[in-house]
Amino acid sequence: MKKNQAKVLVTRTLPVAVEARLKASYDVSLNQDDKALSSSELARAMTEYDALVPTVSDRIDSSLLQTPGRQVRIIANIGVGYNNIAIDTARAQGVTVSNTPDVLTDATADIALLLILATTRRAYASERKLRENRWNDFSLTAGLGCSVQGKTLGIIGMGRIGQATAKRAVFGLGMKVIFYNRSQVSNLDFAAKQLHSIDEVMALADVVSIHAPGGGSSPLISAAHIAKLKPSAYLINTARGDCIDQSALIEALSTGQLAGAGLDVYSQEPHVPEALRALDNVSLLPHIGSATLEVRTAMGMLAIDNLDAFFAGTALPSKVV
Image 1 (tube, rainbow, N blue to C red):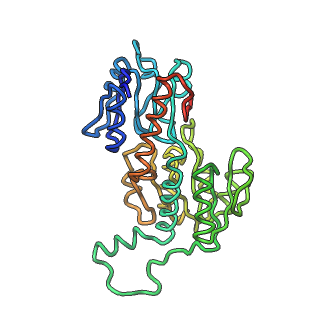
Image 2: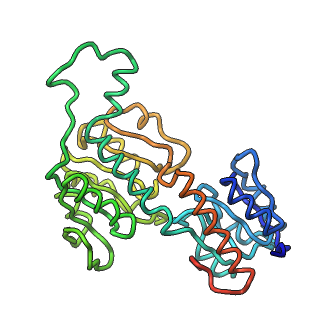
Image 3: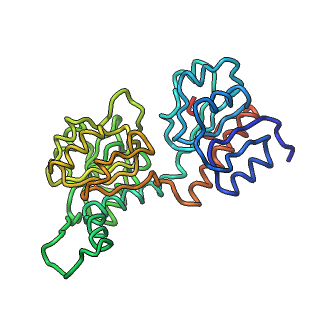
């Protein structure tokens, strides 16, 4: 296959197979040290490359998209989300944006399930007790968690990942499911009841799992929503950090307004507030929802499929704008 002469910049290190395909197909610049590029480096890249392959951690804002002399014509984002990109500006500037949906559904749902179990069973507090050599004897009453069988899981955002998480909860954990989704959801192959508002889900659920896109002007889950949760409830987020009012969540966890939380995403990644890291009733993961070799390889390959289609003038497999 003849190499395309388009110049492509990849912002982070990718699995070996993905980088090999890029090198065989394009005039590509790879990020061998896996360090995030600065805003000035991204601005310079906008004028020197035809395509950008960023991740959800790269902020492609309006000013970058309007860089004088911009050469970039396509941004093949690696991630199902794209709230790191100023989509309206990209559309106005004629910059094509693609993402990598579908391939990470199961992996992210697995992490949501992991966090549900880790949080309700107080896994972090228990492991910390053991590692700090504070486990002195067996006890029937110390450090008790919460069984999830028969409890109600509330899903906010019943898309692919929300459905995959709900199915695991129903058939794997014996939970009941209620959910909120902006549009009507039908033809589910498991029992679940759609409610009319986030408030209703918050008030009724024992565990709430967020699976909605971020990028809004304000958090989808506000302090008022968090206040609706039972003191015995748990909140799980594997979607986007800006989906939740993080300060309100920390306050609820610190004061006992909320039993616990499980988080894989944060509002200002990779910064995680010390107030959150210090809590025993929260399980924290460093944004690993899609972190398997198989899934990250599939994501990279889909990004290249989008590049190939763009430069061939054919329909992109997963075009955003």
